Structures are given as C-alpha cells and as structure tokens.
Amino acid sequence: MNSADPITPSRGFGADFTARVRAIGKLAVPVTAARTGMLVLIMVDTAMTGYFSSTELAFYSLGHAVHMVCMLIGVGMLVGTAVLCAQAYGAGTFSDCGVIWRVSLIHALALGLLFALLAQGGVFFYQLQGQEAALADGAGRVLAILNLGLPGQLVFTASILFLESLGRPGPGLIITIIANILNIALNWLLIDSPVELLARFTSGGEGAAWATTIVRWLIGLVAVIYILRLRDAERYNVAGGMFRAGEIGRKLRSLGYPLGLAQGLESAAFASLTIFAGHLGTEAVGAFQVVMMLVAFCYMAAIGVGTATAVHVGLAIGRQNHRQMVLSGWAGLFTIAVLMAVMAIVVALFPAPLARIFTQDPVLLALAVPTLFVAAATLISDGAQGVLMGALRGAGDVWVPSVLHLCAFLFVMVPAARGFAFWAGYGTPGLMMGTFCGVTVAALLLAGRFHYIAKHPIDRL
Image (cartoon, rainbow, N blue to C red; front, side, top):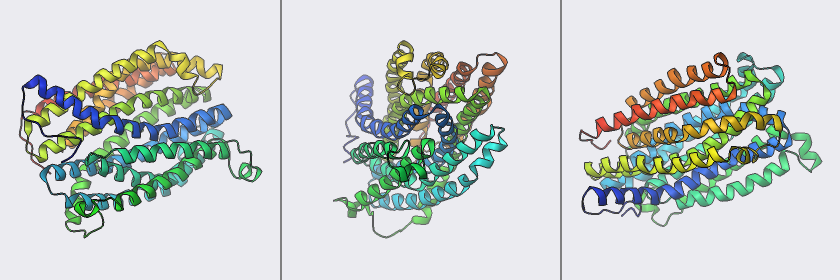
C-alpha cells in the first residue's frame, strides 16, 4: 500500500475532508521541502551574485528568466510521469510504473539537450529584445551556461516524480539538501574565486550558472542510480522490459504537450515582466529578481501541495473512488489557502528584512520593498491557481485548464503589468500589480473548472 494514501472507510464529510487534508499534508511537506531546496539553489546564486556585483546580478537575473521558461516547459512535459504512475499504482499495475519512468527519462534527456542547444544563441535573443549591449551579452552567456544543466535537471525531475507518486518523497529531499551544500561551495569557488586559475575562467553570474549546472548533472545521475538500486525495483520494473513503451510515451506526451505549453507560456509571461523591468533600468531588474525569488520561495508550498493533490486525485481515480477524488481536490485548495495566508502576513509585515537577504544596495532596496508589499497580496491567489492546476492534472484534465491558465497570464497579467508599470507610472511595483490580476483570474477560472469536472465520472488514463 502507498504509505502516503491509506484507504479509510467513509466517516462523514467532515472526518473524510480532514483525513484528505492530513494525507495531502503528509506528502506535501517533504515534496515542498525538496522543491524549495531546488529553488534555494537559485536563491543562493542570486544572493551570492548580488553581493558580488549588482551589475552581475542583473546579468544573472535576465539570463535566468528565459532559462526558467525552458526549464518549466521541460518540467511540464514530464509532469505526466506522476499522474500515470499514481493511476497505475492505484489500479495495482505496479510494473507499469518503471516503464513510465524510463520513457520519461528518454523525454527528459531529449528536451534538455534541445534547450541546451537553443540557448547557445542567447546573446542574439536578448539583442532582439532591445536590451543594452552589455546586458544582452552578460545575460546571454548566463542563459547558455544554465541551459547546459537542463538535461541533468530534467532527469532528476522525472525521477523524483516517479518516487513521489509511490509515496516516497524522502530521497529527493535528501539529494536536494546535499546539492545545496555543494552549490554553496561551488559558488564560493566560481563567483569570486580565491583560486587565480578559476578566476580567469569564470566569475560573477557566469560562475553561479556553472555551479548550478554542475550540481544539476550530479543530482540527475544520483537519482537514477538510487532508483535502479531500490529493494523493490523488480516489482516496479525499473530495469526490465519496455513493454507498452510506445503507448505510455503517447500518453505522457498527451499530458505533457498542454502542460509544457502552459508552464512555458506562463513562465514566458513572467519573463516578459523581467524584460519590462529591464526597460525600467538595471536596478529595476535586480530589484524585481529579489521580489520574484521571495514570491517563488513562497510558491514552493503551492508546488508541494499541488503535487500531493495531483497524486491523491490520481490514486483515487485509479481506485475508481470519485468521492475521494473530489475531496482531495478541495482539501488541497483549503490547505494552500491557509499556508499562503500565513506567508502573506509575514511578507507584508517584514518586506525590508526579507529584501536584505539578497542585497544591501540602497537603490535596489528602495525598489524591492514596496514591490514586496504588493507581492504579499498575490500569494493566496497564486497558491490557489497552482494547486487547482495540480488537482485537474491528477484527474487527467489538461487541455481546458491549460487554455484557461494561458488566457489569465497572457491576456490579463502581461497587459495589466505593462499598464501599471509604464502607463500608470507605478514602475516596479506596477509589475506585481499586474501579477495579482493574472493569478486571481487564473484561480477563479480553475476553481470553476474543477467544480465542473467533479460532477462527472472520470476514467483512468
């Protein structure tokens, strides 16, 4: 039995809902910690680069914005791994899980290598966006280096999604903790290296990018080795025949195309806000990156709860338990609303101390603090839309939610951010005002969609 999802008889709505919240929380805590650990890699890069040079921070921030578009497209293409594995586990077809994982690895490597190749034209891309020559050159080189690590990162992602769908988030968390320790050491060596030979090779934002790239390849390798050495590896067929691989690959892509497109365009929408910040000035880019790092840190709770919700929805569908599926979706939404409300209060009360984690530059702080105050208002809606996407994903409903998601971000958030920042003259805080509009509309649309599908029976993929 999956330890993350014990089967209990119905005890009434209140008791069952509470049980769903507890089950989701049990899986969400280590998943959130593991996802937060991956973000901490970037936060450490941002903080250490920012203390080295505000100019290098701008290079890293702009390069990382486009890198995230590529990475999230890749992650979205692989999210079906967790959905298919959870439904297979719930249905008792355990040997399918290993085939799903190995098919996912092939997709991870192919996508990672494609994005690594495309990013080598990063400087030219930023020049086309009208960025200053120095900013385009620095950001383009950072982007090229970061994307070299994507194959390793996506292999790691596919592997931990497989483990999490089996109720085993612990290994991913442990690997992530070790990765962060190694990343700090590599940043110290490569951002402002005390070793003359290394200092000649790289420094600043490029050094931080190399550190993260090295770590990502290592964690991908370690995750694969761990799964191959599982005690019950034979049960899950992690190294056996590739029966039904073609069919599984088609299912993975049928889930991955809309999710990858949605995540990629959502990330592109946020990247466009960073590009807008670039037109406000180098300091605005750095300040906006500080704010986005803190917002992303809070959003890790939504990723953890959303992943746990998707797994529990998928397990319920595999067991043909519609009531449990519906309860799992709404329990996930309730859980994230409570968590995000607490974090919103903290951010609203302490914007200056939080911003100082990343920079001591008074100009950046003057821009970041009011923007953080606005960001606090976005957190509940942002978390809600993330978890609702997870619930719908677990149910195998991907195309309609993806379209709704894209409409909210591309047609509400981006125009609103541009309007508040430039036309209304609010500058960097205006970018976050637009974000609030986008995530709130997304949350309302996705809640309506989940309410609709909850009225109908859902078959296993």
